[in-house]
Length: 499
Image: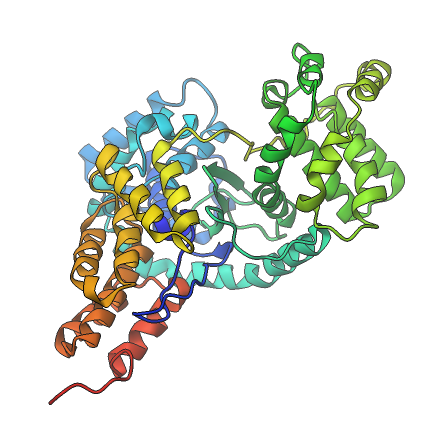
């Protein structure tokens, strides 16, 4: 998913390549999630009474009636054996974790090596083999065509409130809503999911929010994920600058009611404490309710929530810097002795809440995928040092994955920079299209760029064929469909070719 995961550099012309990054947040359909939730529904997953189903979920569950009985039995056996004795309510997250680390249908293969995938996805990785068969035999592309209008209507309903939430969040952070290398957040509506369900998953710097239908929009969870997207990397950079930081995690290491991700990682504790404080400052709730929320977060292990709540009030809000720009200063100003004293005086005086607050579903964690690290480094080098970017893309192909679609695509973009290398660019775009690890949007733009080169060479018929293939994918990242339609009507570049 080069376009989604490491930022896209869209070509505005063949000989000069100004960069235009993709949107940081997108609201879009996801066939991987649609297929996975459909398969999960026919496999026995259920957390609602039938009368509570969204009509689309009711339709999806009927797929079991016409499905190959052998495949249906395999799906149900897999789901049953991988429940590990736990209720259905605890199963959805791991299957969504799997869905978002798969390539697009029909391949539905992991985007990286097994050891680089989230633990939840790895626990049900074998389900991907069944998904590929299910996608074909259940005719999921046909099912999508039948149901997509309902999904589009729900995405339209969510669009304006989500944009408003993110705009207000950026205003508080004083951060421009511009993409950061490697970061993206994809919000997907999935009507086959249970009502009111919200799942937030992350893989490297890519974030995924999967929303079931909710009569009352769940903007708090979307804002929470977005704050992680905006702040996690800054937290990672700032955390090592605080001396004696291990003292705080040691205080809660064996305390009942403390989320393990906070006691095991100071970075997680720091990020979640900061984000909860930001949310409280943005919400401007009455003082008593705010104080109670701070106490609840503190008792769950977020020992820096009181500090950040005060610091945001006295330092960030009256200042002029963005929160990420001032975070180093805020972190280094933490007084470990004072925080230890606060803990000794207050932690055990706070009763355990009957219900634990939402825990970090997108915690800060070190990257463990060398392929993704190389791709991120290549994208960062792309604008200023293309030889370095190419070296990194080639290292991916040489040392890790000889069929990596993102690396093929990156090299293709580099080769387009020089008309003398257009033959090589065509070769790499062709490899991108054929690679199972290429994102659909990446394949779509490979068709378009191939058409641009062919138009540049006055090979109009071949160019038109590629524009038509781009349109057939249905992908509209960065207005791909509008671009292909434009170039289908008139040769790219506007130059005249000999008759």
